[in-house]
Length: 126
Image (cartoon, rainbow, N blue to C red):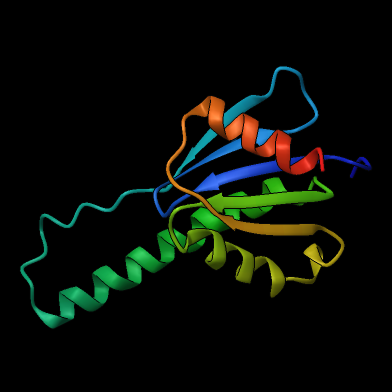
């Protein structure tokens, strides 16, 4: 891990926009959560449990992909409109590989890419 590497991640439950704070101009990388097709489910409780388990598995996989990216940074800002940022933060706090990474969590609305870059730059420029 290179000292001083900083990353901002705007995320919700379906996608993440990753902004690296070391490059000018800032670059954004997108990561999408895997979608599940529920069209074959007929509403029985057995199918609902299977669907819920699949959803949780896909969400865990999504957070794992983000965690792999975060491992390479010293400071990370998680932000966005949903609880996904808090869920990811809890996943990271439960893993001791992330003990030395400073993680900030802030609530925001949906943003344009330029707004995300400015928000990350303002946060890390303090």
